[in-house]
Length: 286
Image (cartoon, rainbow, N blue to C red):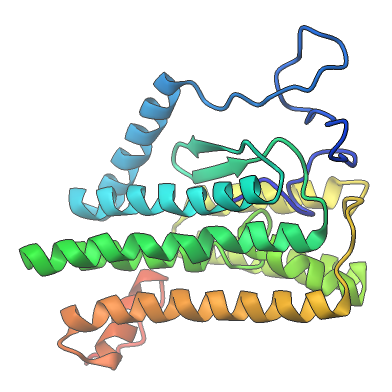
C-alpha cells in the first residue's frame, strides 16, 4: 500500500523546486527548509514486524506461512519505494503497521496522476517476486506450507488491487474513472469500499473491515476530492487500465498456480482452496 493518490495524498501541490514538506512530517528547525521524513525508528520497525508476524501466525497457525507473508509484505512495499525513488518522490520509507500491513511513503506527491498509477501498481507487480523464494523452499524441503505461504503472498498483492480506499487499486483505477468524471470515481470507489467492508464483517475479518470502513468515511469527509496533479490523458487512462488488468491477472494466476501442486494438479481443487480463503466455499473439490 502506498501513501499517494486521491485517497492518501498530502494537502496541497508540491513542485520539484522548492520542495514543500508534507504536512505530517517532523517540523524542521530551520524555517522554510525541506523536511525529510525519517521513517520509523529501528526499534519500532522490529516491534511492528514481530507484532505483525505474531498476528499472522495466530491467524494461520503456521510460522512458515507467517514468515513468507512478512517477506512478501516487505517486497511489496519495496516495489512502491523503488518506483517513488525513480519518479522523484524519494527517498521513500517503509512503515509496518501492526495487524494491518505496510505503507510506503514518499517525501512529496507524484508529479502527475500517471506517476501515481505507476507507483500504485509497482507494489503488487514487484511483490509477486516474493513468491519465487517460497516456491524454491517448497522444492527444496517438500513442505507444502511454503506453497501456502506463496499463495498468501500472491493474495496480499491481489487484495491490494481491490479498488477500495486506501488500497493500491483505488489509486490505480481511481484516476481512470475520474478521467470520465470525478463523480464516477467517487460513486464507484465508495460503492466498492462498502462492499469490501461488508465482506470483511461477513467473513469475520473484523480488523480489516474496520480499517477499510474508516478509510471510506475519511474519503467522504475530504473537501477536495482529487489532488492538483496533472490529470491522465485518454491514452494514459487506457494504459493505466491495461496495466491494472495485467497486474491483477498476474496476481490471480500466481495465486492459483502455486496451489496446483498441493491440490494434485486439479484446477478445481485450487479454486476450492482459494474460495475458502476468501470466505466462499464453492465445494468444487467434492
